[in-house]
Image (tube, rainbow, N blue to C red; front, side, top):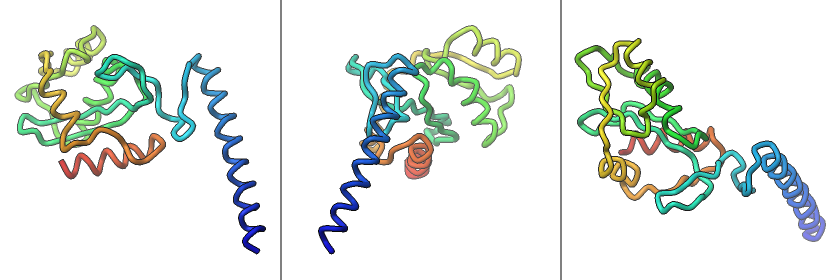
Amino acid sequence: MKKIVREHYSRKDKEQVKKNIEKAKNELEKYSLEKVSLSDPECCMMQSKKKFAELSYNVQLGVSKNQIIVSNDVCQDKHDAHQFIPQIKNIQENIKLNEEIKVGADSGYSDAENIKFALDNEINLYVPFYFRERLWMKQNLGFREFLLRGLEKVKIEMNLISIAS
């Protein structure tokens, strides 16, 4: 009986591995990538702070001046500039932004489309060059990697981390 069960799981594992390999091949071709993850095909190759490419997710945090996380998101986008508008909308779901509230964004968000969006929506935006603060938030409480796999699960994990921070 043990032999039959072992063979069943072995066959099932091989089928899953074949599916994962096929999915990885499709990702490589679809996005002209050099590497993909077999354990988490939804993560993307991104440049790390040590200047080498690794499989990652891009985390976005909206933080009050008192260091309270008011919004978060996890995406597959390699550059923050495309995340400013979705993050402002995410923040507006949680708090009301008025002209008295200053929105500070680091230099990664500074492009013409984002500045125009801020002006059109009467958002009091200034773009400082936060460096130490960015590193501190990204390394908060020793968090350096996600334990779960898949974008939706990683978003849930980020919500839990934000609540605990």
